[in-house]
Length: 135
Image (cartoon, rainbow, N blue to C red; front, side, top):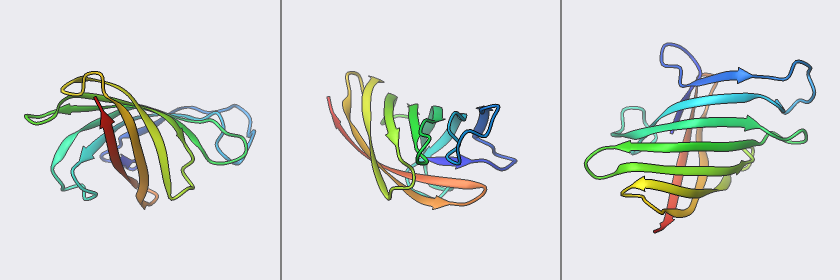
């Protein structure tokens, strides 16, 4: 999943932030995403879908997100959605979030995803997802 914060292909937009600087962890900041999901970490990899949802910086003590998004797949093999929800302490190498549902070929999906940050720069963050499903 590719977060792009720099033009021309911005997929991450900050929509709210606290009026006062309450912490160094961005606590209270809300971000909306519409990220490209590809088969591999390269932006030129085969496109599988889009990740659409929100990141909410939810901790005053560490940089951590409440990650809620839907992976939308519209192709011949994977036609449907997967819904992800959970805490994402982004400074850890690997994190786990829940798969809480799905539609289409993923109807009734439950499981988890291990997230790893592959690339982090000013303009782009690439996240790797290893998803395990039980349907």
